[in-house]
Image 1 (cartoon, rainbow, N blue to C red):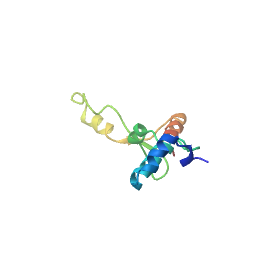
Image 2: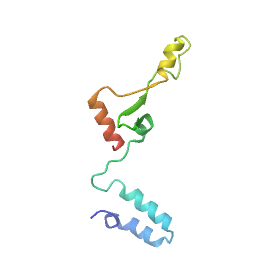
Image 3: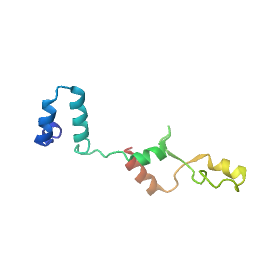
Image 4: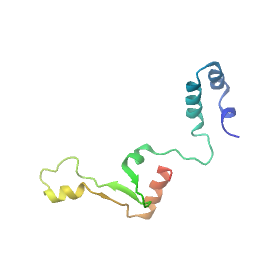
Length: 101
């Protein structure tokens, strides 16, 4: 149903004119990624900020450690370097949807 036939004729003609299979596969991938029913694109900014642990929980790093740490106690800065989970179930569900999990 979806796939090569849903590509506009101008793009299809360019793909057919090229002999390189690498170009053809990359064009197909670019044009059909968002057309496939039932798949959601991964939000790349979320994918960089959250990781999925082995037990299925989401892991994130704490904020507040990038600058202005000169006046903070060493123990407080060290605590900011640790990872933590997500407390709110609705937020976790939204992040999972954006990750495509």
